[in-house]
Length: 134
Length: 332
Image (cartoon, rainbow over all chains, first blue to last red; front, side):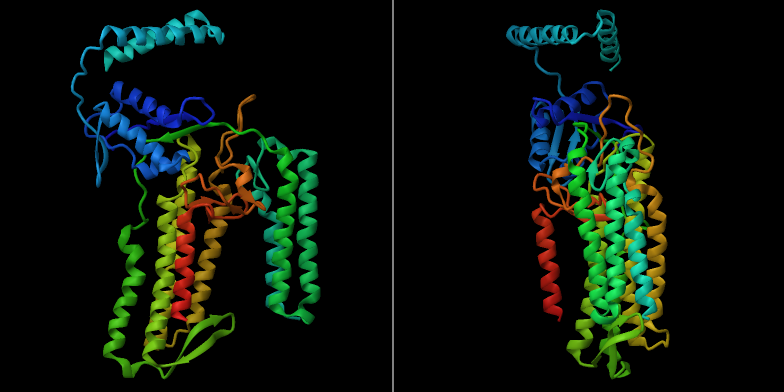
């Protein structure tokens, strides 16, 4: 592992979202933000599964999904390694509309849960800054 | 009066008395609770009842040692401790707290290795291989009879010098040494790290390291015993057993303040749920046996007691246990 600071992966075992999806989402955030860089090694499947308390296949499935998305390369001996991802193709209009809808749904959910509007805006700004800096 | 037995029984009683305080702050009799629960009336009542059963069993063992013998007295004491724990665990279950379902893992953590590296861990079994080669060349220098088992008073079992006895003894000593090293490796690689960040992550790491060191130190005893027996150095192997026992006792004493890796656990904020050791309460049978087929861990920090135990729900645990039994039968 090349990184010098701690990177934590957080999952909720009671969430309706499957654990493997949460692992993919959590790791993707670290990859998109540049916390995990090309050449970095992901924890071995066995190690991560034991620490999370989930089946090995759950973690292996998450790593396969990330490999399919082009983030990591899986080798039998060395495990999963982050690779330089080729620029993804432009999403088609349908996919773009789907992501916009999901974003709006999430914002509505945050407001419905009682989060103040200014806090949501602050958080969105922070994310944009991270995105621009990555 | 059998003074050593009297001392052992009192020691067992004292251990049983204090063990409930040597676990993670949010565990009580192997059940996850809020740390404040320990000071409640219900907790005090359960603790009193537990200690009463423990000391009653010790008193019964002391009273019956003359009629029933040493083994029976120790058995009574241990059985009393198991019953006391099982009873306290059962009483505690209705008080179990809802635990946090959030799990955090430090994915930047480096893999932990043997303290001192692999060489330290393979040295005992390696030295036994060297001893086996030495035995081939110096067969006539071996004693005609040699001990293979020791107790408090010295050698307990002697065998004649035959190839089967000599190499069987060496194989047994090597097997014990390897098993201890494998257990140490298992704690490093096949056990869960509960906390990912904060001061307690460091405490947990040190706790794990001390357990591993203890097992590696213990793995040297079989090798030292075999060398002393065959080289006839005059240093009795019992002394070395005593030395290792003292070292193990010191390690255990050092481990106590770590409270099973939860020594500096942050108290949950108001409204926050306790974490415990992130294993389900229902999987701890009688508060001491962990059975969880859904958990990939093979080794798991004990909820009640000091050190690690195995996950009896993991098939690899049974494979290893069956291997040990077969090895014992084969070498006998």
